[in-house]
Amino acid sequence: MPAGHYGHRMRSPSRYGIDGWPYLLGLSGLTVGLATVAAGSIRTRPTLAVSAALAAGVTAVPAVWGGHYVLRGKHTLRDRLLDEVPWSGDEVVVDLGAGAGLLAVGAAHRTHGPVHAVDLFVPTDLSGNSADRLRDNAERENVAHRVRVHRCDIREVDLPDAGVDVVLSTLCLHNLAHVSERRAALDEAVRLVRPEGTLVISDLAHVEDEYAPHLRAAGFDVRVERATATFPPQHYIVARAPAAGSSERSRPGSRT
Ligand SMILES: C[S@@+](CC[C@H](N)C(=O)[O-])C[C@H]1O[C@@H](n2cnc3c(N)ncnc32)[C@H](O)[C@@H]1O
Image 1 (cartoon, rainbow, N blue to C red):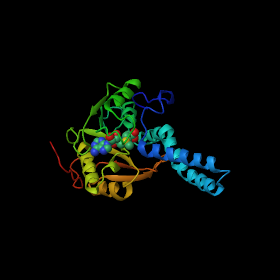
Image 2: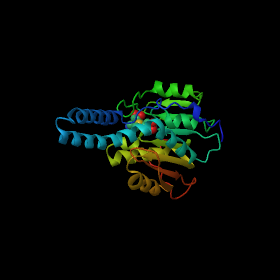
Image 3: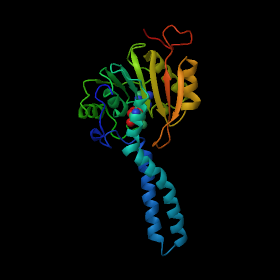
Image 4: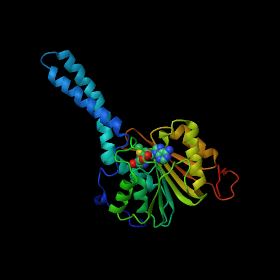
């Protein structure tokens, strides 16, 4: 494994944040509230107690799975997505919607090249979401010298055309509400990647019905996979950019 592949002991479960933490917090609070109602009314109002207990069971399932994803699943996903890249050890990488650096810091262990971490650091998308958190995670894993933070929109990345070997992203594009915005983000990924470079993009929605056909139309060779240990369930694409000069390649919005 090139560039010092990291071991399990280097990981801390919480440093990469809780995705969509307001939802997880709401579900957990609801579960506790319903369980409290069930326990408190078991003697006086047994019908209410049973109903509340059943409802608590229903809300507990996504709350527990969501917690499992944050603590373990996202690290499993990180390894699986990074394993999809045919690393040689000198790649230039960009992580779109890097958050606390889950993929960016992971990628910095696989290459000696620069890893560009792009994010707007939206507070409600990830707990503790900030450039400082990302830099701190990179420092803790001794890769800060390779990770460069870009505070910008994933649809307007301040990097040149075809200068990146690997484009990574997880749980980011779905945050763009409209299909035209998500297509603009994919077009930016197409602009950034060099001929025959690799895209690995994971998300909880739109992967099969939007991202894959859009990239195929741009001439990419695309495979769709189902991720494991993720909640909500995620799919991801592994896409290879067409060769230079390929008639299939359409490079939208070229800036250079
Ligand atoms: C759920 S978090 C995932 C973070 C990281 N990829 C992970 O898996 O831990 C989604 C990230 O996308 C970022 N984001 C959302 N919309 C964005 C946009 N238009 N441009 C840049 N970043 C964006 C948020 O700030 C957040 O850090």
